[in-house]
Length: 325
Image 1 (cartoon, helix red, strand yellow):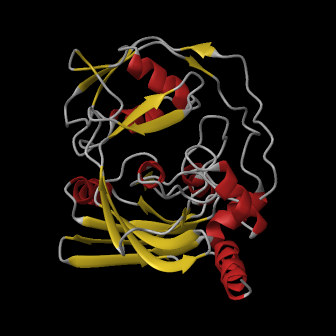
Image 2 (cartoon, helix red, strand yellow):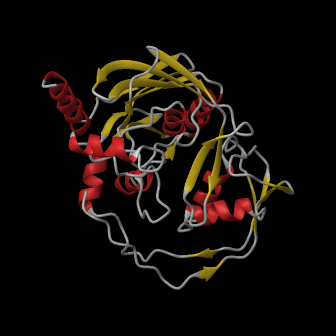
């Protein structure tokens, strides 16, 4: 994908305090996603800032980013400075074509992407157009909402809902542990056992500038990952990771916590290991969302995306290195 130029902006305009009532059928949505929909053009870093500083209130109480709304809730939104995009600031045609090619399934309820690495799930923090914005531009008549997110550098299955009941139904399945997500990753070293379960609470902090960092913390949220060794390579293991919870950066932080950081991870990884993997041809984070399965009503869903060619090439290079000693 070509390097994206920054969108041009008009002079910021002031927005007064808003008090919004959550419409029937809209309950279950996280407050940060609700605000993103209401405050078009506002960076997510600013949305998180007004949440952290207690300026957003739900029924008179301070809201946290993970607060979920109920039908009829009253949301107080403070004045913010909104940078309005000029009408000419639209995604490039090649971006739209690329995201259309990435669609692997669609029906009346869901649209599923095999998201390329390097494409954010949504815009913000210096990214003008994420997958959701590109798809909305490509499908202007569709109503599309992200069900979950993938890190920008993670490739693979990303599910979007086309109808509100599908969105709330699947989000409830994820919260209640009734959805299965499986990832493929390359990690440093060899697991002590064929299957390792990591049960370590995670706590998220947002640094100045909007960068998110996550660490293992007893005061954090329950987080469980299962690492299953598939192949051994010199100094590395190709693993499948099943997650019971979907915390930010969960697999990356859990891998580092047990001494098996992910290949190509510039935030939580190991520099020397990353250098060795670059010599094997790795150019990005080796993490791929391979499978997403759930049941909704009477229907079972199973979405999958094969390991991309660039990551397969790294495994082939490591296999050759093993045979040539």
